[in-house]
Length: 225
Image (tube, rainbow, N blue to C red; front, side, top):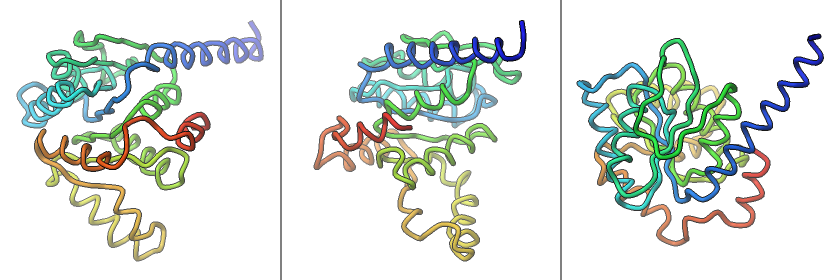
């Protein structure tokens, strides 16, 4: 098969990933996307923290969306799986994530990072980000960019474990602001939480004056991610 034909067939695979994701996730709102390292195992405090947060979110009525792999992702799905709402895994096969965790009510499989990232954003009412590596930083930077630029609706972006994140946020607030590459207002997109109760309070406080459903204007933005 020629390169041109292979690329044409790949377009159909990409479309299929989007269609499958849209069909399976369109009814899960409200949902929270939870991010974090694949390398932190069950003995790590942040694994236990992620599981407790996910359980609290699930029992509060939020579906929990994770990357479906090991580590923090497994903890998120495990906690949500024990709760009363859906546990969702957006799975992708990577060298450091050799398996999908078994704690998923809805399990989607992706070949393409960009299709997977859309699913994390499109159906989320909040983002909860625990310690992680380059992948987690990539996801955090992307959601900050989408909200900052108005390409996605403004929703809570919650960093868990301030000791881990404070150096990065300090760099945002000094070097980046001093250079003029971001504004002081951009830092207001981020908040720190440590416990499940704090995470829930941050989300409910944000939505106190409005419902969880996106407005017509926000729905339009989400169509154009």
